[in-house]
Length: 101
Image (cartoon, rainbow, N blue to C red):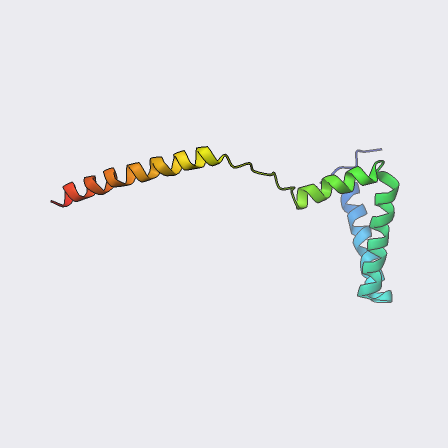
């Protein structure tokens, strides 16, 4: 049997058959019922294939909503940084005044 990969005639035929089945379901039972069948199939596939469901869901949730990393603020370091910025500001202002004159 040939390999079942994207771009092969077997893959194209299988995908075509899948779309025919989806189209037939849409025409016979309607959109919402077809959507419900697809969701139930996905749930069954998930339950049948994933070994550690709790870990899988935790990792998926962390990819969608990453956990916040608590940031610790060192007060002394922040005060020193502010003082450095304030000390640099007058030097910059003097340099601008000298260029204007």
